[in-house]
Amino acid sequence: MTVAIEMGLTTAGAPATLDLEELLATRLLVQGNSGSGKSHLLRRLLEQSAPWVQQTVIDPEGDFVTLGERFGHLVIDAEAHSEQGLELAGERARIHRVSTVLNLEGLDAEGQLRRAAAFLDGLFQVGREHWYPMLVVVDEAQLFAPAVAGEVSDEARRLSLTAMTNLMCRGRKRGLAGVIATQRLAKLAKNVAAEASNFLMGRTFLDIDMARAADLLGMERRQAEAFRDLERGHFMALGPAMSRRPLRVRIGATDTQARNGVQRLMPLPDAALEDARAVILAAPPPEAARPQRRVPPPPAPDLLSQLMAAKPVATARQAEVAEVTPSPEVLADRRARLDRIQQALLADPEAGFRAVGVLYQDFVIRCRIEGLGAEVPDLAGFRRMLTRARAGISVEMGEDDGWQDVAARAAGLPEDMQGIFMMLAGAARTGQACPSDQAIARAYGTRSLGRARRVLGYIEEQGLIVCQLDPAGRRIVTLVELGWATAPGDPNAEAALAG
Image (cartoon, one colour):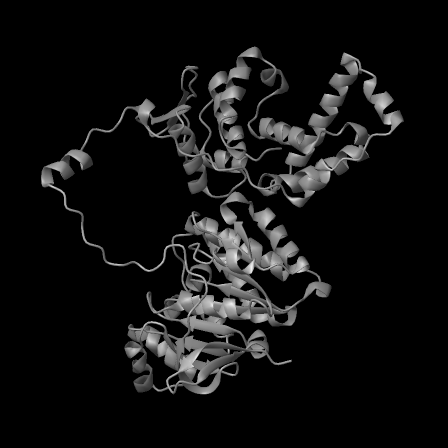
């Protein structure tokens, strides 16, 4: 069955249609400078094809989240999920044929690349029985498949570039049809751009981009200069899914809009210079009066959490066993065995970067092998054990009366940051050196040192700690009110592997 979706009108006023089945087989590249209408074009394509094919959008700016309200796309906030969780989410979305929008807004460049790569890998790695047709739209593709190294680490760039190359080069056999949009062809990796057979070229001014566009379209340089004269929302189309010859198209209207919308000119407010000076240059409020930063809501529980929460009703025999109170010696032995299992689990250098749900599943299996199947902590209890272990808090210290105040203060932080606060408190309590950025990143479950520094800054903003540097550039962290302070520590030091 041939499905022709209408993208707009040609210069002759005829409908400009796109063969969706041909697009799924041949992929699409959209290029145009900022303000040329690329996002509008992608939105039109997504809206028109939504009833016919599963879709996913890699959205670095949160422009496409409004598709969820109108067309039922599942919006995934990448900042609230780990890389492993997003890879699993990609697999599940493919298996259950759910259209999604991966919202990367709020993440730094490295975080966007890593999470987008993980999600794309999840889409790519599903079994053959789930290779359903799927439209994969990547906005600002030059961020995820850069032609040259940038400010991100080589590892993040490699992961993202590999995922994008798989999408464009090997995705067709798996039912994945890549639709990539970029502001600058010159900044997009050539092996990614070269796999597209359909092109929609918008307004372009730079010579190097026009030369790349002319080369892709098989046009002479003189013809490609016409790209400078294209109006906003007008594109030159070429490819088997639209036209065998360059065809000028005006993209039609959309049912949804981006959250930010188009910026309009507005008159400036009438205000006297002295009034403006009094407002803008007023003294900052005292610390106590500053508005507190909103604590982000905890991420939604994953499938494993929901399954573990649905516990079966205990039998009469189980109820009788549960009523028997074990002796202190039995409790101590059980706790020691659970701690050994957890330490063996965390001995893996990659354990710090795996999702808690995945770690818990491994933990449950190890406990069953040790004969502790009926005494395994639930997921919430495992999270508390994991937080204590990652923070380096011993069992004796955790049971100390003075530590209860630390736990109460940590409870006011997001769950994933509580372990970092406890790590700092443990180092301060015992007089150890302040943990390095790498140690904090490992405990937080990330490889990004920038993310570790932002976590530290967030905890300081909440008024729980004060960070300062000594004359040698070593960091000292002091816990507010408790008066505990770490010894000076080099923030750039290498962290020892847990083992």
